[in-house]
Length: 95
Ligand SMILES: *[C@@H]1O[C@H](CO)[C@@H](O)[C@H](O)[C@H]1NC(C)=O
Image (cartoon, rainbow, N blue to C red):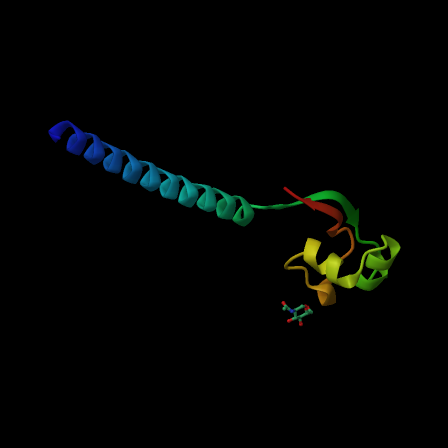
């Protein structure tokens, strides 16, 4: 009788530990996925040196990029202030 009670108590304890362990693991997994997404970095694969008379639009067209994509791979670029020999990214990937 007492033995059975102890067995049940151990079983319940073990089950709750297992459930706790699974939920902690799940949370860690979730956190790792979120961290991975947050740390994705844009890595430029190919740069282009601005020539006299170039515009962002013309460069984007020359490299068959949509203006949205061009802007995305060139964050903080001010297209109204392009200067000759400025490096622009014309091909990038997320890493
Ligand atoms: C972009 O450059 C132009 C010309 O120099 C300037 O007038 C404008 O304020 C700049 N815009 C930003 C967002 O820096």
